[in-house]
Every structure is written in structure tokens, then in C-alpha cells.
Image 1: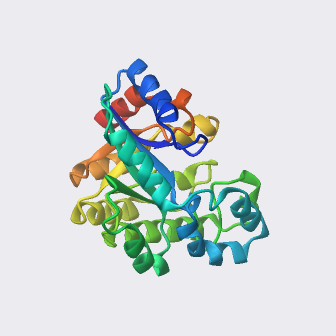
Image 2 (image 1 turned 180 degrees about the horizontal axis):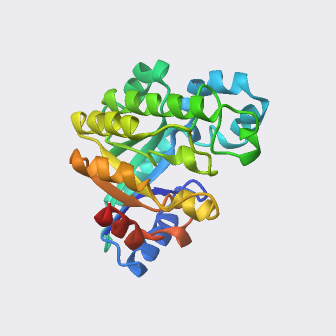
Image 3 (image 1 turned 90 degrees about the horizontal axis):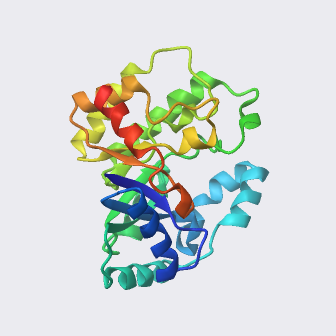
Length: 260
């Protein structure tokens, strides 16, 4: 079993911290864990967020608190230390990168030949709207327009060929909002783009853990079905931000995939 999306941002860059995730993975009988950081953790990526910070005081305040804690060489040094050890589970290291179409060239330059095992591209902002932060931010928003733009950006992400996988492909449903139209057309377009770019999709338990009353477990069943039809690889993940959540609902996520 794989947990393909685990954040290590709440601890220091030490073997002792990584080993807490490894120990939990062993308890959960996982074969592989994929550790990553949000790209905004690194000073080198901060300029990419200037446009969204300029649009929202809330985002600007959030960014000020969270961003620029490390430099990429610090992370790469940790990765090299871990790779010299032997652990009972396979460990891969990567980045979760916020996708902004206008920054495709920048993303490519920042990640080329850095030695990461994988790059996960994710949509966290729709035209500057931080849709997954607080449910009250949706008040007065045009749900249909947000959904259209979200999936248009997701298809662009997949077509960019910058990433190995797409993170939580329908996280837009986190707070329970649904569009008035069928999403099957967008699902087909996204699946085709992922297939053409040889990318995987992240089947993720994070939203359901965070918002159990409004978010279903993993991807929508119709989306899973379309991805399988297009032979897109699907990797289960917890989106853990602490060792305790490693492996959360991985078996249930696998069942969802099998039944789609």
C-alpha cells in the first residue's frame, strides 16, 4: 500500500522527524510513503504568490505566516541524509506545487534537475480565490463559474507536463458546494490530459478527514470511473500533516477505486 501525499512541514529537517512518519507507516503496514512540502514553504517560490496576495488581505496574511520558512537546499540536504539510511518502507521525496498557468516557465526552471522523486501539481486558487481555506469565503460566490475555472485550470495543469501527478483533483467539493451542471465533460477532458501526460491522480483522504460533514472520501465516483477508463494511474494518499495521520483510510480509498 502507498501513502503518496504526506507533508513534513510541522517539524524540523531531521532524521528523527522523518522516522516518526516511517514508524507510523510501519504500524499501518504501508510499503511506500511519499513525503513532500508545499512549494510556498521555500523562499525561492514566494514571488509566485504575489498576484494572489495582492487580491486578498486574508491570503496575504496567511502567506505572511506560512511562507518562506526554508530554502530549497535545506530540503535537498535532508533528502540526501534520508537516502543514506535504510528503512522498512520505501521513501520518496517531492514537492506539492500550486499551479498557476502564468508561472509555468518559472515552475519548470525552479524544479529542473533538483533531484526530486516526484512533483505533484495542485489547484489551490481559482482566479485568486482561496477556495479551500474557510467555508464562509464561498458566500456570494458563483459556484458554477468557480467549478468551470477550477477544471479548466486542472486540464491546463495536466497538459503542462510539469508534474508527475495531480493532487486531490476534485478538492473543490471540500465544503459541499456543487455546480448546477454535469461535470462528466470536464472529467473526460482531465482524464485524457492526464493520460497523455503520463500523470497519476491523487486519491486523497484529507478533505474527508478535515470536513467529514461535507466532503466525501476521495474523488467523486464518476471521476474515478473516467480515470480508470482512460488508464490513468491512481495513487492513494492521506494528505497527512502529522505522523498520526499517515495511512489514514488508505484501504478504504483503495476500495473506492476498485468499486468505481
